[in-house]
Image (cartoon, rainbow, N blue to C red; front, side):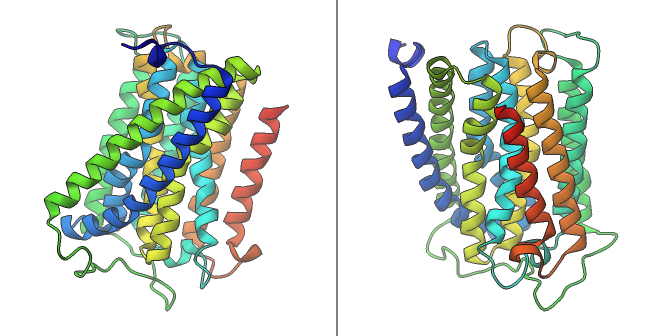
Length: 345
């Protein structure tokens, strides 16, 4: 393998690659919004479930690669903080996307039982990750048992949410501002479903390569600047990790696919919680959870609080609110930047 791919890059190269990979991620994400909206209708899954699973997976690929690369490179702080930092930044992205839907708050217009259940699932996953940190430091074949629990809970949660989508026990009240998920038969009418899937997978591959480049560049930035791994992982890598979800959510809002916009964020967050499992497997120094430092644990708690606030916003469904983005949007901004400020101290 060429040395340029394995050796640590200089600070200049690291910064240049970091910015280039970020730009590529943005371009790919805009196209993903169109493909995701169309495939949600073609497959019959609907925007909420398709957005949370397939869409969430593709937009999380860069973060998955970042976590795996940094964990395998003996940078557990970067790996852990990237995963939970991406969750915090992506949750903040809903407040940004809300600003592009001016008629009513996004959480009101995109009412969905599935989205609220994914929010509950995310709280459970983050809670288990925190519990693992304070559990006995044991591994089986190099993997902490909590990683198996996280995978099992995610799989079980998907089954439960899929069952609720077909036979819901309760439904959100529709109002004049609610935009239901109605299939659009005119989307990409001249292209086959196979061609759409091929493009979807191709973009996913590009996003993965971008994730590897960002992770390798981040290692050079930590070494060249002296910044803490927790700060670089949570803020710089976390923001890039959140870019696919942020850009695709904004694009989805502008297309009127509001349920998809919210599902991409929450579903992507649930998959980002599983990034900790990937990092735990890739890390050769034992349990990734026990390698987490106070900064990473503080960030995890912040992501938990932000998720609870978002879930509250989805339940309250405020039509108009503080600064035209609702009480939850304002609180998300305050909590995120407050968390970043503490990490920077």
